[in-house]
Every structure is written in structure tokens, then in C-alpha cells.
Image (cartoon, rainbow, N blue to C red):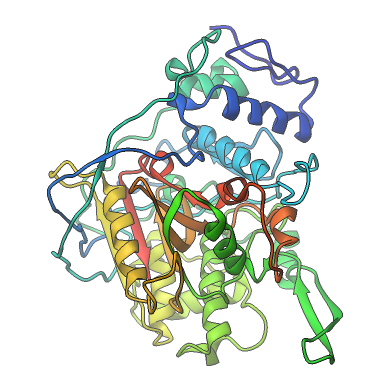
Length: 492
């Protein structure tokens, strides 16, 4: 197969090309790929109405152990990490490169102007690697749950598309690697299937903790950046009562996102019911070049709910959002108390490092502060029901409890958000959509990319969007995205 050189990027399926590797040109190429040549005929971020055939009741699979993963030993062959071709500052594994590029495509699609033409100034938010994947030694204190649920099974539908130089259905992961890295990438091993849980706690490696799994301390410049935090500004605003009030804004924090999503969902005619968490949750994203701190950013989003509502335990988070360095200290103290303490053996300690964290660390932190939470793990079972269907059903049941007026299309509950972990990334679930077709999508805040200007302009306003589905695209995670993963963890 001919290698497409990155100095003259072009579409591998047709004659479309861009003149350079400049971020705007690369976005144009990614938008073309997602629009004209979506994988399997369906873009992972395109929400489609699908017919469902009823299936038998399936049990929600929850276990005491986190989904299985074989820890890597120091010195053994590890995952190979590469820098993002769009130079966003994130290091990703070769096997996650395709998914990472799709996330960039969704980020670009989020830069729509609801009251005018699409913005051409979309640019990637310089962030870092996603949080740790799920593994066997990631000890979680999760309850047993054998409740029966009804889960519809989606039938596969494919959108017809024109013939290309090469069908994207036959354009595999290895081809994506060669597209951006050249044929040398074939030397790298693929990540194997999740194996049985080991009998003893072992030190994890780069596959689980990222490219800096064995560092003692992060670079001094990064520590200083985290100590200083994101830039904060104070402005005077006119309050509804006519008084002038001083309002502080933090560069990587966006409050007021959930109410905007509520209005957009209300205006989307394809939706039947929508459930949302408490409106006080902030969208908190990474700072430039900070690395793999997604897990911490998702914890911060959960803390934003605690601070906004005065939830029990709020006294532990006075003032501003706790920093990543402070969260590291709190997790280490939780281990000292014996809560998920195997994490210290698995990671070798996280204080002052860029090692990835996951659900066990988030759970340990909250439990150490006596903040009520519940963790559940979802794995493949032998009943033929996809794992993601169980996750969607569990989220639906969670938000249904908070509904007080069933007559509304959009239910704005007072419930906390949900921490979601799948292999390679973590997100914050702030809602769930039920489409008129019966299919469901998660509504999430992703710490990997910042809130689009189009969404920011709608915060605090009543509006009418011409294409609400376009603005919602970056916040939706449905079947096409979730079906890629065979294991999930949620913390709620």
C-alpha cells in the first residue's frame, strides 16, 4: 500500500487534499473524512435513528472486581506512544490513534455558530493523554447487583455512500497508523484482549499508567503550571437586581453548560425524552501540554457539583476548584487510610507525577471524605447483550429516579453527574437522551477539549438554534462510540 506522506496530507479514499499540516488544514481533512467517508458508513459522532428488535431481559452485570487487565511488568514490551499529528500536545498509543483523530473531528464540529455561518477558526485545545484504561488490579469496592433489565438490541443499518478509491470499511487500523506514521508502525504489537484477573497485585506499566508510568516526578515547568492553575479573571457584571457584582472566570472552567444542553435537546425534534444532571456542574478541561490528567479533570467536575449544591462533604472543597496536585495528595491520604490501597502498589505512588489514574482513585478520594458514592463495573457476559447497552440502561435508571414531573420532554434533575471510565479514556456523564426511535445516547463533558465558542455564546441566554443537533454532536456518545469497548466502570 502506498504511504500518504504527512507533508502533503490527502484523503486516502479520493482526490481531496490539503496544502499543509497546519491545524486548520488538518481539520479540513478530518471534516472531509467524517463527512464523505465515515467508517462503516456511519461516523462515530453521528447520531442516527435506528430500528430496534425487542430482546429478552438482560441482567445488569456488576462485579466486585474491576474489569480484567493483565498488568505490564517493568522491562517488558510496552505500548508505544506517539504525539498527535495535529500537535495538540497529547501522546496516544498507535491503537488509539484513529479514535483520537475522531475526537478531534468532533471537537471541530462543535465550533458552530448557532446564529450564523459555521466558524472557520476551530482549533484543537492543547491537552494531554486520556486517563488510564481499566484493569484487573484496579480494585473497586462495588456492590453485587443481579436486577433484571430490559435492553433492546440495535439492528445494524448502513448509509449508502459513493464509491471511493478505497472503501473505508476495508481501511483498517493499521492503515490509519501508516497514514500518519508510515509503514514502520507495523512493528508495534496490538493491544491484546482483556485477560483473567491475576491473583496478586502487581506493578502496572505504560499500558495502564501511560508513557510516564515510571517517572519519579513531573517536569518542574509542568508542576509550576499546575501550581499556578489556569488564568483567572474578575469582571463586573450587572445582576438581575440592578447591583454590580464581581464575577470570577477561570480559563479552563465553563459553568452553565447543562442549561444550554437542556435548551438544545428541547429543540431537537428527533428526541423523545432527555434526562440531565444538576445544572451547577462545570465543564473543566485540560490546560496546554499538561499531559494525561483526564481522570483528575473528571473528579474536578464532580467536585463542581458538590460545591454548587452544598452536597455533604462540601466543606472539604472551599473556594476554588481543588488543583490536580491537591487531588493527588488527597488520593495518597485515602490510600493511607486503607481505601483502595492496592493503587499505591500498582502505580508506585502518584504524588507529583503524570501517571494516569482511574475509577479506583476517584472512589478512594470520595470515600476518604465520607462522600457517598457507588462504583459499578460492566463486562461482557454470555447473554449476547452488548456491554454498552447495560451501561445505557443503568444510566437511564439512575436519572429516572430524579424525575419529579414526567410530563416534560427534558427532565432537569438535581442529581450528581457520573464518572465514566472505559479503556483509554474517562468522561463525565451529565445526561442521557432517548430518541424517538428508542435508541439512547449519553450526554458527556469531555475534559480533552474545550467548550466551543458557539456554546459559550448561549450560556445564560434564551435562544433558538437553527441546527441544535450540530451543537449537541460533540456532547453525544452513542452506540457507534460505545460499542468499541468491552468494559466500563461508572462512579455515581
